[in-house]
Image 1 (cartoon, helix red, strand yellow):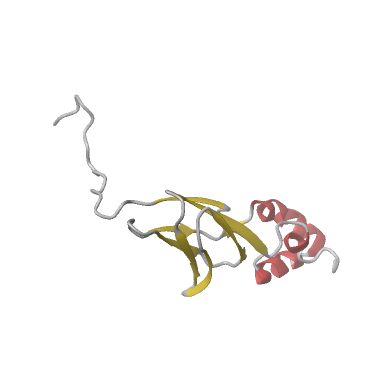
Image 2 (cartoon, rainbow, N blue to C red):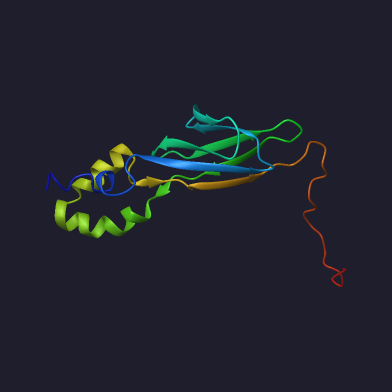
Length: 137
């Protein structure tokens, strides 16, 4: 059972994950925040940052001269591999590997490819309630 402990830590993506950020237009500076702390940055998009998997979400904030700041909330969800291994874990290790994975963050997963659109400063906000032609009220 000791050899099987930490199943996702050893077999899956491990305790770290790459997050690739692209912006439209490219060339933005993006800062990654988790639980109130800056955990890294991409100096110019597109780029990739390796982050430790944790149960806390990551907020990515991107800035580029001439554009409004844009952000993306990257939710820390349960890894698809972990969801499939829960039943086997209970049978083989009495839940031990799930406990190890939860403690080190290996059972969490972020969106790996993020695309963020940047809005030029002073550009009109998109209309929220527009009617299609022929649907006038």
